[in-house]
Length: 139
Image (cartoon, rainbow, N blue to C red; front, side, top):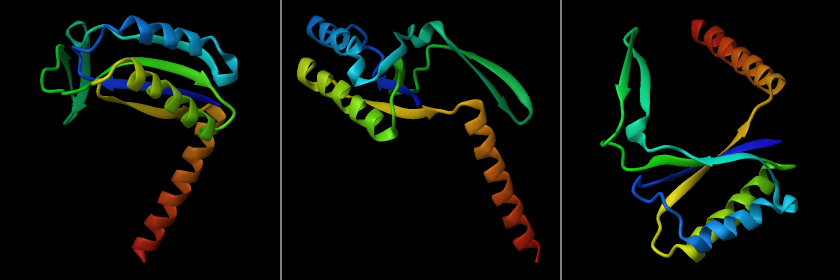
């Protein structure tokens, strides 16, 4: 199972202490702790943009996004056998931040990446549930 792990923190906290960077590199190379498919640090929000559809209109907003307290600053895509393993891997990763960067605050969001067949099954189940709710509400 593939999971994406999104690191969120204040944007000014971008440069990792060397000890933390070294510790992350060490666990990233340990395949018994999950296989790293891809990972990286994102460019500053000032270099990005958001594209939104609202009221049928498409708009583009250039960064920086000053109204946002926390931004997604980095990501990892990892393979684990189960969600509990992914959660444990994320805990180990966040422990490195607590140990090597006292005072750092942020969060990690962990989400499974669905394969096309998993998404199709989930969509079919949701459609069936919505259909049943519609039928029961009509009487």
